[in-house]
Length: 319
Image (tube, rainbow, N blue to C red; front, side, top):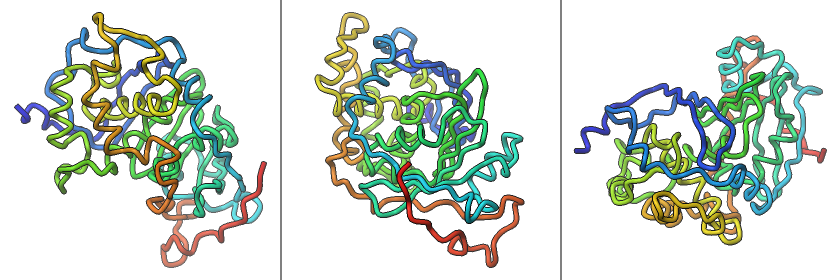
């Protein structure tokens, strides 16, 4: 039976409509995902009914612990340098790296800094990113090496690869958190993970929970087990942090509470991924990933090709 889940794909493009009727998002996700040999994980009548519009986004915005970023631009001292992740993905979108500004983010719950990038025409401001990224628990934030904001007039897209995260257009919180959910998937301390099962969703325990439930949280989740895990993570993030949790929404599918229909999957994420769900679970950032290599915007490497030869970290200042 498990052989049905063995087809791997390096690139998935899926029209996405999240469970709380968020904005349509086209996801381009080069992260390896386990897919099945048919189009969907479960029949359409086993996809949860949508929650009230914007309920997830509004709940997170109000109740997740807020950490505001201190932001420092590299433009004054190192305008010709850029993380390799941002360079590659800007070029991949046929945009000039010279139109990408680089920033340091510093949060009050971590001594290390994040290196972030924004194209001059991106719909999100760098302050938008600083605020919204800071809503995530620091353990989850630490899984992201770089974020790149790119323009996409009239549309939205999000992707994760190589520890970096790319956001195009005016995406919502759910799209940002979904992409981080893929990194949680590959880093959460699930039992039974092996060198050949690097994702939590590949483990026997997750598969057992998935089959016991027989439901997925959203149409996006129905495209593959990786997206299913990321969407369950969104549900857990809401349930743990918003007063009354998912039960406060009262949404049902086929006469049963939505949260009961994915209970086994939801319980696993809550059990093993606590640090990625709550600001009170450790508040540590020892797991924080370093930026990808710092290079020049003309594509050349710094002397010796070492990231350590990149810009000296500047003191962060509030904006």
